Amino acid sequence: MADVGRPTELTEELTLQIRKLVLESVEYTQIQQILNISPNTWDSWFYRDFQGFRANLSQWKNERIVKKAEKKVESLISAEDERVALQASTFALETLGKEVYSKRSELTGKNGEAIKVEGVEITVRK
Image (cartoon, rainbow, N blue to C red; front, side, top):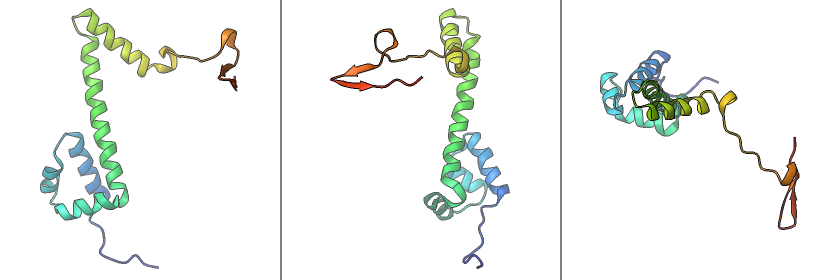
């Protein structure tokens, strides 16, 4: 059965243009003007999460924030204040290098035994 309704204007090319502008911190209203997208169409795509539009916007915003944070951590690691550099380095190691440098907290009873809480035994699987 054929799809009913008007064909979408949300092409892959337009999606990539929107992503680029979101990553450049351009406001949504400005993106609409730059790419000639009506506010009603934008709102409809967002509300219906058309072709993952809302999810994509959220993901791109998070990607933008992570990129900015990475740049900040890079500059802080090289800071002249050794305390700041140490904190930034520690943060980077514990998050980006967590496979090797993460702090682990393991909850067990005395000598690695199961924990008992008010008469209930919690089994710790190894």
